[in-house]
Length: 336
Image (tube, one colour):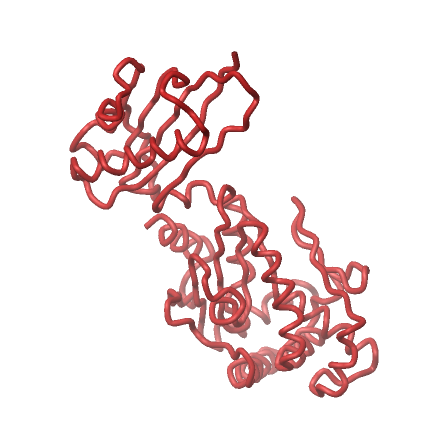
């Protein structure tokens, strides 16, 4: 006989007896059904509820399901600032005669507690310099899921065009290169590596020249179609945070959460200028500002999948906010 345990969680819409019992029954029944259990296999169950739930003990729902001889206990979940409200958690101990792999169940808003167990997709869009990549990377790290920098893929294409002596603004120079171009992304614990035709170009693509080339090739529909298909295939396989210019509107229109990050052109230029100076790259603030303005125009006015806020995206202006403040805001959105 094998002894094991399985977790589950669910949220309720209000601190109401009927609602609490209904949702707890739903969670218990799904845990039992998903894992092929019967009542005789259950040794005991621990229920916890956040401090905003006190209308009834969740264990009452288990008794109503016939678990009259199974030891049950209810506790209050430790309160942590910013944690998911109105949440009921379950820890079910079971005995099995086989080596089956038990599957946890997270329902309603509780799915955000374990994004690694579901195909959670978060789309972050916005203009250059709004902080998309930094925010997306840190959010993914905090949630324990993967981050895909789509802009790096366009940078890789821009790099190839320039290395071949072609003009990234001309479709007739770029499109013929697509069939023989292999752009892939390797995701591991150290982060994201971008491979161009099997060569690691992660560091090479982080220059102003390549950034401008990426913006130019990104206006060509054939380039976007090729790279978007790669991005969608990755998102089908793993929970992911993806940032870019058209993620919520075109690449992942059904993303679970869509964010549009923005900031004033002056603030975005200041950030970019500071980043370049810290890297030892001499630059002029006014020139950086003009590049930001021009890139905004390119991205917003391209005919195919232009930069725009999705109707169901949450707008966040980062002009007067720190990175930590933005991350906390996103976590709250996921928890509510």
